[in-house]
Image 1 (tube, rainbow, N blue to C red):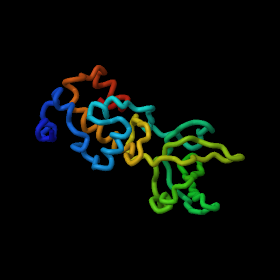
Image 2 (image 1 turned 90 degrees about the vertical axis):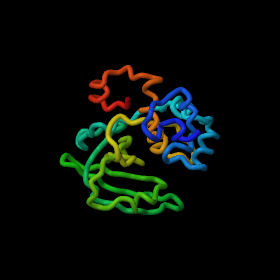
Image 3 (image 1 turned 60 degrees about the vertical axis):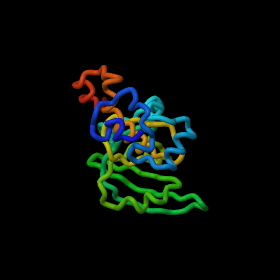
Image 4 (image 1 turned 135 degrees about the horizontal axis):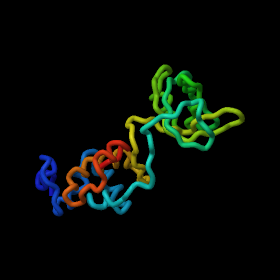
Length: 197
């Protein structure tokens, strides 16, 4: 069955039969990723939808750096003032410093040397992560760069299938499922809290 057979590509109604839409028909899922999903027990679009997030990440609002406390998981925004890559034995450490109009915050990425190439001094960043305290200094360790704001799903790790790809596939399929599983939350409530419908 293809997306053309189901009417999904043309934006047509999503019927019970369309639930048999093949994973490889979804944008971003090639042969290797489909095989990885199969190994994780996800064989159909219904399986994909029923493999619910393990948690949610709130990137809808940022916290001022001056208000951070160790142990909090936060979203912060600021300008990258420093960035350097160094190695301790085989361990790569990318260190940075982020500043907003209220203060500064250390950044550390362990075993992610590519971050030194992806980021530049002067970049305006929105980062999500857990605040750690080392001696008298606060930092974010292995923060995630935020490219989408809202309450975002976090899915269980599946090798070779990035979490963003899974979230995009679910988001692409959800509009076609409305007739089968109607939304129960009012539109205003979902919009106010940035929830997916």
